[in-house]
Image 1 (tube, one colour):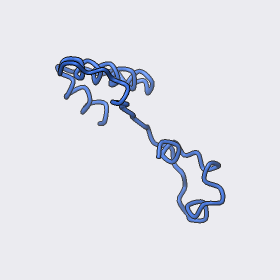
Image 2 (tube, one colour):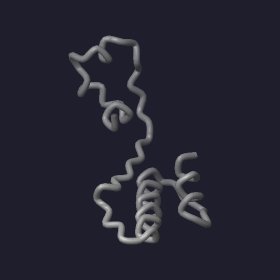
Image 3 (cartoon, rainbow, N blue to C red):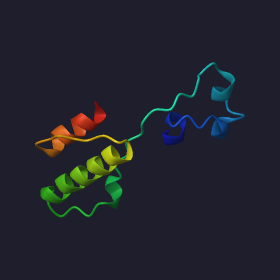
Length: 78
């Protein structure tokens, strides 16, 4: 799905989607890989979400102004 939303049409050549009028517009993709996080405490998970949100914001040139990890994530999505 990441490649689809990044508009990488060439990866879908020969598949039914390539024969449609879908224009393969590029959309921002945000991925949180929770399987790679060692979470022993809820604070560890919160810190991972903060770090991942900050990394994605930096990647897309977004400056976040937030008071909590929930607000930072919501701001990133907006």
